[in-house]
Every structure is written in structure tokens, then in C-alpha cells.
Length: 90
Image 1 (cartoon, one colour):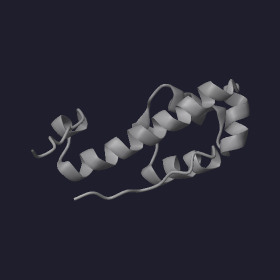
Image 2: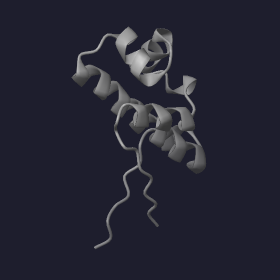
Image 3: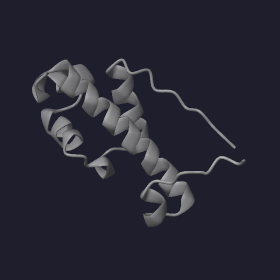
Image 4: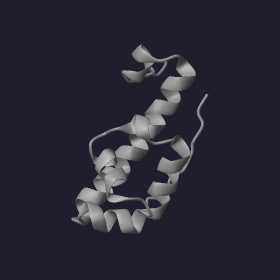
């Protein structure tokens, strides 16, 4: 039996290539956001660790993924020690 492919809401809103990027950005944002929450840091403290301003951390916490490029989110996740990786599947 073939495994059913599950799509996020991004596939309803964007072409396939953009939806894939948005899913990755959302996953990275969520991971960094969870790291901030779990570490119990203030936004100012998290900003220092991540190398961004407190305002950028606020945007991240509020879910404004359109404000962040995929490459920046990868860098933020790495700075948070989350070891982001890319996996391709056919």
C-alpha cells in the first residue's frame, strides 16, 4: 500500500516549489521559537545568542515567517544549537 503524502496548508496557497520553501521556513521558525521558550530566555537574551535584534526575535515569536529568508532561519537554528539538516525524498 502506497504511503499517502500529507500536504500542509501552504500547498493550498502557493505553487509546489514555494510551498516546499514555506514548509521549511515554518519548521525552522517553530524550532527556534521552541528553543527560546524552552530556554526561558528573554527576547533580549535570545537576540544576543542569535545575533539579531530583539525586534527580530519578536517577529520570530509572532510567527512572521515572511520576514525571514530560508538561509537566515537555517543560520538562526544553527546558532541555537539545533543542528538543522536537509533531507530529500522522492
